[in-house]
Image 1: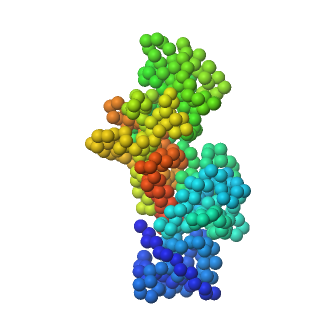
Image 2: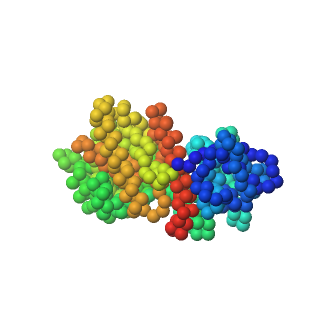
Image 3: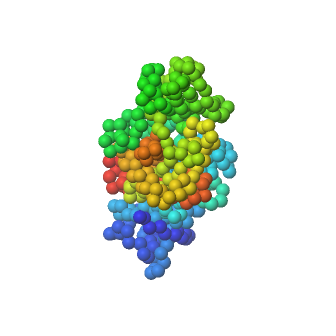
Length: 457
């Protein structure tokens, strides 16, 4: 783990860096160059007097490296007689507004909280979009948050980029792909968590992985009515899901009653009301409910009889993150209870978040469930990483547990929602996930310095 030091500035016309008295690092030789992101400056390097464990930076060096005045702490690490002043992490997104207090609308609060962990990690994170890049000078006019209001600062291109685009529409734009390719190709900047997972593509890739296929419910792209009919006959219930859906939108639960030979469809309508409709045939159901939709954009998934809480189905959200050593960790677990009459457990559909302790009063059973969920999440994280292109640093899983206590993976999300952290018992995990999402940027930065040719896609 990188050690973090406080920063002291002093007036001097020379580029002077004074190392903390306790800094050892990889200091085999005296550094001649200081680096922040893609900016570098020749320096006069000195050592603090004994007992003064802070970084001294002259006004000239800070100005020439574009180090914002409000940065109060930095990590240090050496590479090839160059000393790196922290890790500059660019958080790329879209949807910027003209409002200074909320530069990205309602998402501004999330980003403010994300940037708040910078001092404890010794990193320098900032927010930017395509319109903030100065290609000619290799600079970005980014957004920073140091505890007060949002501020704009000119900063060098970063060491690493954390992709936080809000939706699939924004990532499909040609300009996004051009920016990503150029920053990776010309500047060798690693870009992590790119792209939303395609549900069916992900299931197809994981099906052939023997370490995880037992976690996967049967899932197919819809080719015909017969495809759905066969699965209904086998499982009595199935889910129709948009291949590229999110937040539970567009999910329909189909059930077949053998005794009455009737079909039921439970869904949320355009007015956000939970609906349950009955049909005499599957064809009538599909022609009525999906008459204005292309069924080929949906997948059909095996329904599971889930364990329940007060007669309401439970599934589980499990977050995993990579740390600054590149290792996967389970960073949060929560239960999600379905709303009355709802087809999903999402809070916007009336769902309720509960801790494992609230769901499982028996400690032994609670520990057993937690262990099983963690094992599934870590095994699947490694499998997804091995089957998906790009650098993945965080995943949000939706798991189910059936009546035999078997774990099933319903979905994996590369940009998981954060509604579970509204629960009082889970707020500390909110902080942990934010720290880890930036810590992975430290890992990628160090890897790119050690093996730059291996980091270029």
